[in-house]
Length: 244
Image 1: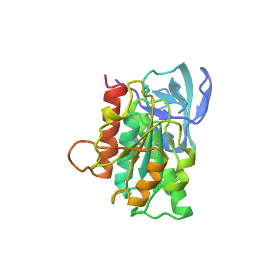
Image 2: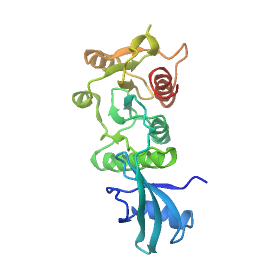
Image 3: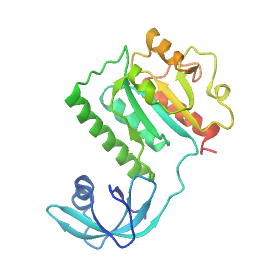
Image 4: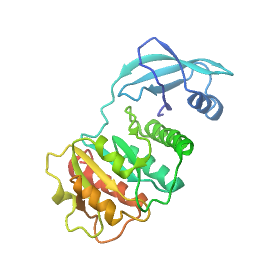
């Protein structure tokens, strides 16, 4: 039986006792009804996981004792950054959840000319906290020990300076090139730009093309924003990643 995995924001050392995050403690003890002495798996978000055992449960939370520490070998050889036009509600959650499962390294949510979602400072901070929780849960479920970074939502132009040096692909249903043609066989770093519900505007496209983004298409059909990025990530993993 596969053990429940939870994230801990601390270094893992065999024999140490660690307090679980409040949400993790509640899930293990209130939802799954685990008791002191029961086993689980914890991971630190930086590449390591460990067997663990609940040693204390009280009103304030729960503590675990760390067992054998290991470094799972399940990260993709591709380092994919998803530059995603912010989508509405559950669509964005889906993109983050499934993108994490598919191996995305980092998410950069952006506002563009046709964005339908508007977030002020307080709402943006709350949404960012929620998004990071979605990513953490996806790592717990999928077995990843690295937590993908989720950047603060920001205007598209502002995001350009922080993007990594990588092959840059702009999903475009009218482009003439596909993913296979656009990338060299030894590609390891990719930034994938996916527009919001209304797509990229001409001004957005000009900005992205000025930053060396190359337009690529995914077949003959127009895909929704919550479909396009995930389909492209799966294609990249099949071509250059770990779907072999």
